[in-house]
Image 1: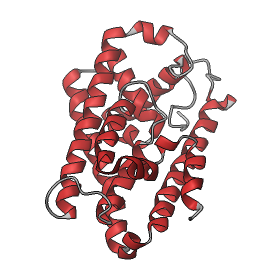
Image 2 (image 1 turned 180 degrees about the vertical axis):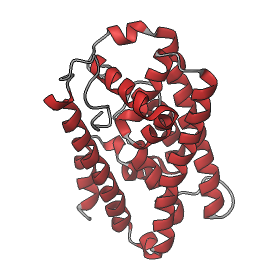
Image 3 (image 1 turned 90 degrees about the vertical axis):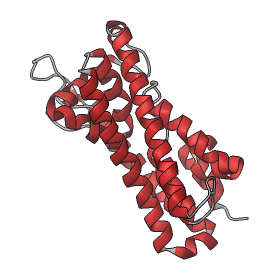
Image 4 (image 1 turned 45 degrees about the vertical axis):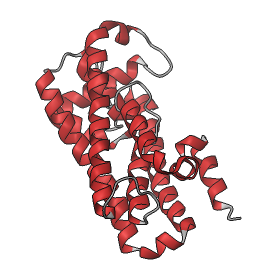
Length: 243
């Protein structure tokens, strides 16, 4: 029995955060579970879910024909699946935005373990720096895509503007990462007969994401991220960039 499948859950920390474990455990239901995870991550205050890894893994699984939910070719499977994932990601954004818009100040006032006031402030700085593009750029950063949705609601960003740019971001995020996995699976056909290498590909992609997240968190938690110039704003945004 290969040791690699046992390493991935250890690396991710929790079994159900591992796409390979989800596929082995639930089979075709992997897609529906992924939709739920994407919806929650994109708007319901759980920024630690593996949205990027799930999208990449879905592309690989479809290309290597390890998942087959809809009739037709693998490409049809991919197109239908990614369309549903876009809907789930956008739906999560809408939910997060409307919750933020409804609750408003209480969310800012509560400095909890997940919803820290500092995260809101850093996200506002990110918004100020990038404008509408923040809703697209933020999609590709795990922690950011959760908070930027809530902050847009709390700050009462124009609803039509938010919906438009959020949908654009959802399409670009879902399609680009899922297609990356699909392209890899199609261009390296022996992956379908070497499952361990599929796991390595997903493992490596997830490792890169975790490395980026570790760097981001280190930068946002560093003293340099504080309001050292006393202008009432953090000196680094939630993505870890200086402002």
